[in-house]
Length: 398
Image 1 (spheres, rainbow, N blue to C red):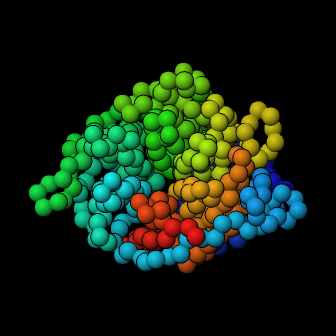
Image 2: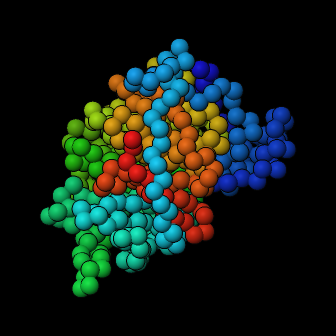
């Protein structure tokens, strides 16, 4: 499958924005105009609309286990999408992440309002506003993670943008009289992740090893992703108290480097970490994460087959098809929400390889920010920018 190597000179904008189609149309086929457009988009922090996308099709690195193939190792029929059970019109304002408590209550973060909301029995209540959050552009109240020891420590972890940086804090949840949930003042455990109007990363998740993994963005600072001592453009691995996890490859908090803007983290049945990542105006990625691995940004994108970099396992040549965000893995199938692509992607995983993705619900429900596994084995899909936003409830995979 033809894949395009990123030059590092194309537009720097985030896949999380919309652009004016007329501007992109005028730039098509006009190199000087295209350069000017890319510069304008860089300053605006938005992605090109894919009008100058590279040739080639979306493909993975392997066939689906037991599934049909096109003869070149590319699966043609990954797992079917789960069935939509219902839509929860919760009047959400740009929800970014959600976690489920042991009792089945869901906690949702809202990026711009900085509110935490609790959802139980299909109804949302406001828990409160997280202090210290400074929303701007793609920054605000972002990722959530539940402590592996929640039954004893009651900690909810938060990734958010402050006036100075992006940081991680934790709050203790408590049940008030009448059953409503409250939280105490945030305890900041990790600071110094660079912030900008775009490329703030924000996904956090506890791994099977009990450590907290953190996806960061390059915050438009191109010198950071290749610097193992910088926090931008990385996947970090820290202890629940915010210290570098023991065994990290560089002796600090950095677990992998060379990332542009990590948006999704999930582990497969064999304990392998996968991550979704925004490309610039080409080459969105699904990556298999190796400790100490260098994923190439800003020198390259996608799968250029250069020995000094780790190739992406799946490449979407046009960011109009994906802009991959939240990621879940159930069984041997990955479920990936798409923002600009406005769909759910499914991919079969086997032996560290991924099949060609198949899209579901394409442009039916708008931008999909996050995919969350529910206690019954189904999924929640969080929409974005629907004014207001809602939750799609999917049943367990067949």
